[in-house]
Length: 116
Image (cartoon, rainbow, N blue to C red; front, side, top):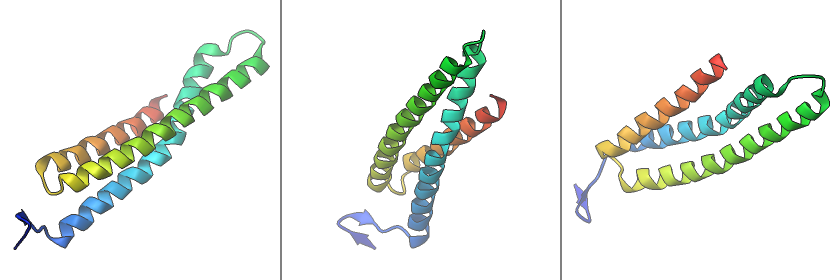
């Protein structure tokens, strides 16, 4: 069957694509906290020297909030762009490759958090 010259895809693939997009979106928002913690740990590793701990504490909070804001903006932009991309290129191999790359990138951030 075709509608306007485009082959209709099965509902199973549509639900899988929507589910993968929703899953990667939720994981992306959960990674905001993970990246914030990574940024604060790196800051704490290099910045805490001497006995100026009060100033270093507020510096760490600033780094953490900055990382959270940047990640929030990036996550919203990437979620919107990925949703549009997957709607435009549904069922094509490049759409599935983007899902694979997105999942691999998100897993790499979570694995990185284990080592930092």
